[in-house]
Image (cartoon, rainbow, N blue to C red):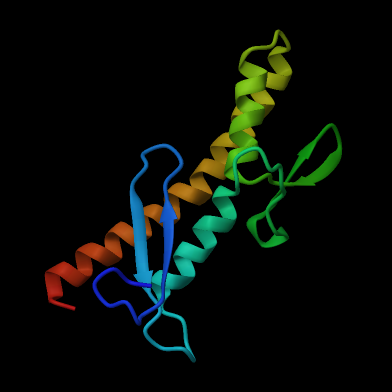
Length: 126
């Protein structure tokens, strides 16, 4: 529920690195707004810490050693990168960096989109 309007449900996303929180109100029960949809996507992409999970196929695939994989969620990619950073296998590290950068892009692109929507609302009084 929205803090200022307790009867309006909201969705929320907190960025895993910056801690910045984004919220969107679900004003129409029949149709979700663009902000609600983006925040739901961000929550899927970010994942949950210590709960390894792959992203849905719509977010893409990568090939490693001739085998195709779905991208992991952001938390899983970050944990894999941290593990590879502490290791001695340079190839594993390079692969973890490449995978993390791709997943981080998926997250960052949507965060930027939310910021642009917020600026648009402020500029045009919505």
